[in-house]
Length: 377
Length: 82
Image (tube, rainbow over all chains, first blue to last red):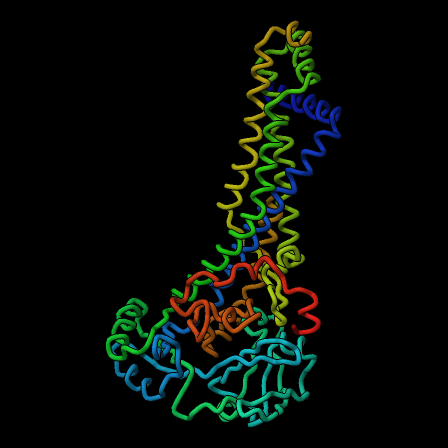
């Protein structure tokens, strides 16, 4: 109990000492909080998006097979599906018909897709929420497209996909196969690529190798690569953000180190008085330890809470320009708070521990000198 | 801190249903990518190698134009299209 009482008294004294220099300490806490806020925002945002991508894309096709002609991607002959289907281990092969359409009016890129079971008729389309927003259109409206022959074709919007699916469907336009082929003048015996399902997940690589053997002009892309793509992208983008902020971070490190490691004359005098009134060196170090903890922990907690609100309550508006780029159809979505506690613990360790240590060492030096000399200096 | 952890857990549970629905949409239509980078054909499906794309060499190659992440389109270009 005596130990706890002692700690309480020291903390009490530390806080009143901090309040006596509130201007200087408040400035430090503000800068410290801002640095933690930026770092934590980048970490929370990129980790949450990576997790969301891995959950949503878990059911992406196991293998997507593309055809290569002269080293470039080309349309896939439908007959290739039968060849792949005969390979042992393949449970199904489905052709995919999809492509892009640039809308000159709204300067937006749409992704056009033919679903297996398009439940509407010719001339009808289903659109994503982003298309509806950008094209200012909705159910029952008409959307015009220029076909590959230059003629204008109009489709009727039968359905708008739910806004909760924007992360995967914002720019999608679904239509029947006949409309798709007519719009792009795509031959009947060609598809964009093939989606291959493998019965045993352990055999995906073997099946991909067999496909390459039997159809040397094709390129299989396995699901693992799709998910890894998103890891690479978000690491890359968060890396860019961190590089930009590293200058600010270094400035903060120098500022904090200077503040923490050099004691002002007033602080030295305070230590001298404490020693003269009977404080032990260990008590002075304890006081400085609590001072460092109070500043760094308050800043870390405030920065983290602000980052959490920024990312998960307001969808990270500070990062939107980076994520959005030139996109017209940027999806409106709320990021699900998937938190990597290991990452947060690392951030805590890298911010709180160095600062606290930096405050303790100079105080120990000042506390070991004769109180009279410290007060006179 | 505990509050954040509890909030995150509650939100994850609440989001589980629509995340599953999105996963089902991906499965049903055999989608391969998130519609996050819709600014150009070569950024829309980063996992798919495509004609004239930054990713035609291999699917998880880095974004071709990282400068696009830093510099937004000038306001005059956005307005006039030039």
